[in-house]
Length: 286
Image 1 (cartoon, rainbow, N blue to C red):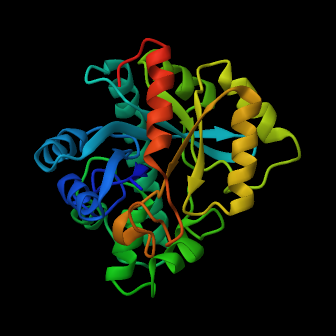
Image 2 (image 1 turned 120 degrees about the vertical axis):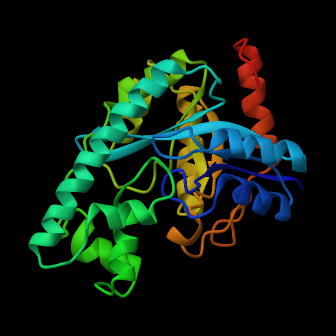
């Protein structure tokens, strides 16, 4: 049985592996294909593709965008991104600028709490162009202010933390439309990680389908079997495709491994083939 992983991160955003190291791990795990889906950047894709060609493993160009709703953030994956994606690149530049402004405000709040941390410390930890809270958390850990990354978010960086600053994000419709216009497969990421009012997720998914949403991430490291069944029903209701991935971040999400998540995740090659068939039916390249 050939397996795939369509949701992974590198140190271009908030993972800890380089793009080439990520692909080498996927090869060692005998995965047939993986998608590299860093937050707000495409900068790791060329390196990942080059390593994939050398090792004979399929690498799908992707990214992950955060969007805001009345019930919190919702993440959108774009898969099969074209090489020429200037409209997306322009938007990503703006998102990274907003991230940088947020990082500065968080660091100021931490310093106001008596923690000796600087933006230079954060930049030294971050190896890619998309810098965010996980890198600040790593600095707090290295300086001994927290015992682990979880405590960094609970005490300081999470929504109830002492130094929390809300993130400026895209509207969901804007993100979906942007990716769809580029010919990407647009996927609702890990939709069961939050609890929504009854009927809200269904209405939301149906609305986004009208803007170009084409798939639902049914299989994810944090989805239960009941969650998977709910995603299958959601996709069927709106005629959407199915995707899945580990959401691998390396050391920033301990215990989640490529292709298998926490040990029980299995995403068959047939999932990828079905998405490709949908793309061909739409006249889109795979």
